[in-house]
Image (cartoon, rainbow, N blue to C red; front, top):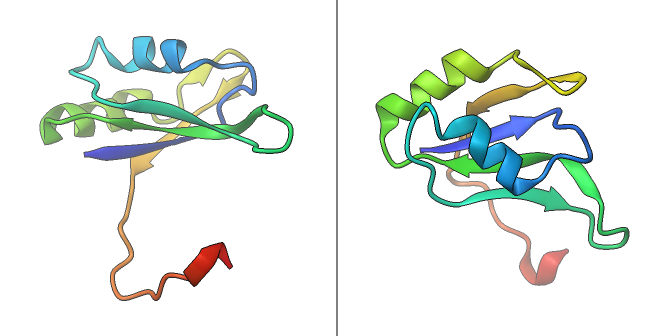
Length: 90
């Protein structure tokens, strides 16, 4: 299950994010989204956890948790079906 983590401190690293989730369960890919122009964090990222039960436990345990000076928000990534995708990035 893919999780969206919002309100991350702009200095948070992917390693720190992975360390936060690993005590709850296995973490597959983990990424923090960076601004292409500045190279700085946009303040959100994604964690994939292969076991649904562990991902749900992570949402319950970590949503609203204070990490650094920010309360993070953790939720399941919802896939929007039927929404047309723009072509050529426009």
